[in-house]
Image 1 (cartoon, rainbow, N blue to C red):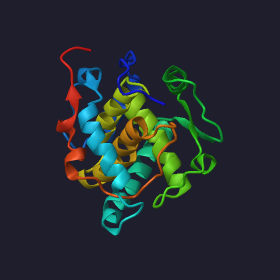
Image 2 (image 1 turned 45 degrees about the vertical axis):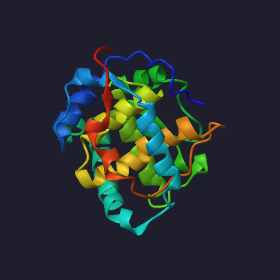
Image 3 (image 1 turned 90 degrees about the vertical axis):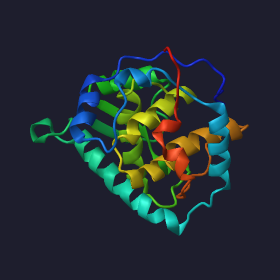
Length: 225
């Protein structure tokens, strides 16, 4: 089980073509300076509220459909940008969906993606289907989040890195779609870290958490890395 009290894993040098690509793709909100992502910290008090909100939310609710429709549409656009041929404006990353967790740590993932390759764990193989997204759409999200959230921010898969990846990736989504992104990343991470004693990933949901949890200003940023 992940510990929210562990020291942040050392940041790594963000993958340059992904940070540049994210800027070229376009931002829906003012993006922090790149150095901010190195200083993002998992806020246990806030995370506890997020985890409880996630676990108490319904598995699927109609009021979330508009946010998830926007989230799905924007995720597919990001995915096609990620894998698109460079001569046509894409980033040229080869993504493969595999049936086992492909990376032992973030270093292995980053080494792959620096070579413009990325493997993602199949939603179908995880036996945790999404109530709104198809398996293929969910796999696309896993790819773009690893690329534009983790590799482009320079942060790993520990709780602090997941918070930084949410902040980084949220700049590429519209305000409406960001509500779904928050459930998919911030909500699930907080529930896993703080409310899953056996370390099992929480059930995926298509629900909206309170809007304040989608506000980038809620992120805790330390004074130093």
